[in-house]
Image 1 (cartoon, rainbow, N blue to C red):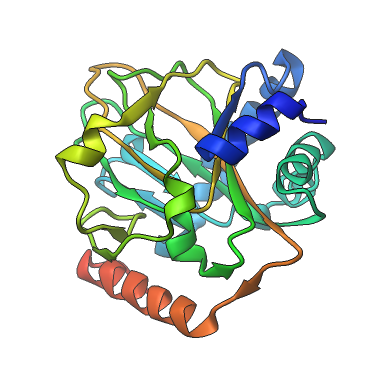
Image 2: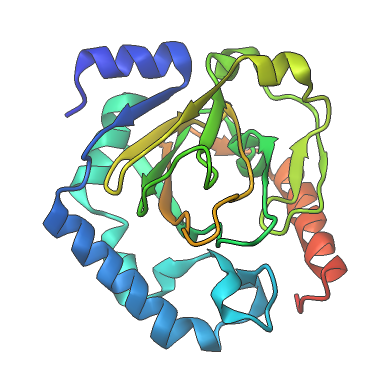
Amino acid sequence: MIAPSLKKTYETDGVVVIRGFLPPDELKRLTDNLDRYIREVVPGLPDEDAFYQDKSRPETLKQLNRIQQDPFFADYLHHPLWTGAAESLLGEPVRVNGAEWFNKPPNTDHATPPHQDNYYFCLKPPQVLTMWLALDVVDEENGCLRYVKGSHRRGVRPHGRTQTLGFSQGIVDYGEADRAVETPVPAQPGDVLIHHGNTIHRADANRSTARHRRSFGMVFQGVSCDRDEVAFLRYLESSKSQREGFGMKT
């Protein structure tokens, strides 16, 4: 269960951090299976399920989508620690929308544009949150998440197409006033950052020369949510067009 103080922080700031969310044995079980998936499954995946900074360099793997097609992760979606936290924060039963793995490899210029997740999800009411688990030491050098606290209470900002594979839409009017109120959130392996679907966030590129910035994420929506199918189809078409622009098969 989530402590009342954390729930209040989530409601006020649109983001909350739970340090040591996964104990060491649970973290090892997750990372061992992620390593197995990358080693054994990823080489055979279609383009839309595995994104690289440079596909000719396997070490630049930066995003894995729909990893719940693997039996371990299909079962992991229903892990009570994760679903319990999501239900406590949203105040209702939840459905899980899938799992993803993210990385910012060293020596790659891959910044995450400012965005709001629910612009992609198109859910109303926005009873949706993302749980983002650090797998490495994450700090400002290797691209920690940066949040605009309280932005979830001000609606969805205008988004437009970006040149960042995996984040096809970014906030078009994000400026210096926004950057001035950003909060960087460093994390240790096993810490989880939980943010509301409308909370604005971004991340810089990994400026380190040897450290990765890996994370594992799941999205949970309350059962009260409905999807705006017209808006969602528009997003899917834009995402497909972006992948085609990168020369990927769709």
